[in-house]
Length: 153
Length: 154
Image 1: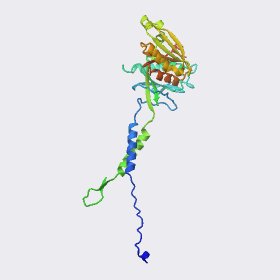
Image 2: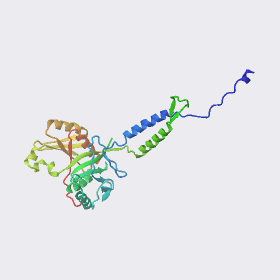
Image 3: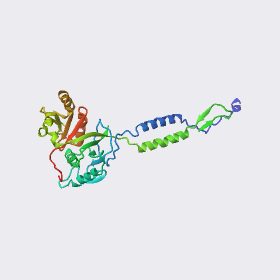
Image 4: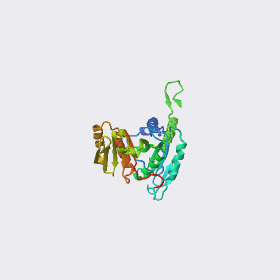
């Protein structure tokens, strides 16, 4: 009898409160981490798709310069194609005048501070022979002060 | 954002974190999408003029100055050539490059820079690896160019 007189059990509440304090903690830690690693690069480089930059541990201070990019199929000066390549190499009949001319034009348009300074963005697989030709052409136009773009591990 | 629990003027209140979470979610999503996790750097170098690679053709002062040329023959072999007031040629293994450069630096304190060259088929990554190691010993590393091409066309 007592059993029947017992108070009816209260149904569980349908209201739910999510404990978001810990979630806020996690988000804050994530935010701090992302803000810290947001801009750690010493250099702002936009390499072409598929370009693989070499690795180097010790790097120097960054500086804005005109860029010369050597990829698998192209040599580009400040993003403009100046010389075709085939599998990282210059073809036998390739003339270097367009590269020399483009570099010469760039040099005349530069201020005294930037004259003779070049940022070389070359693929890690480029043979030294190709780079030698490109660098020699640049040196002939007065660009002998180079910065070589690399990836920091 | 602050919602009191009771109307009796008590001190208990709850901070409404939902809006803060919203802000953090948006900021984190933005940072994740816009940040680049690749860190770029640059190595300072200069193109060594062909005459500085061979001191015997320069002036007397140049001939007295020591010049160390490091030639990467392939990924395994390296040639070292000291010219100027002293002359020395050695063939070393790629793995011992840093040690050899340190020993050269110890023997010739006046030597403060080197000229790095490579064989035509050596990949740029090997050149940079060699330069990275050499710069730990000598701060000034110039890239030496051979005399095969004189401009115009290849």
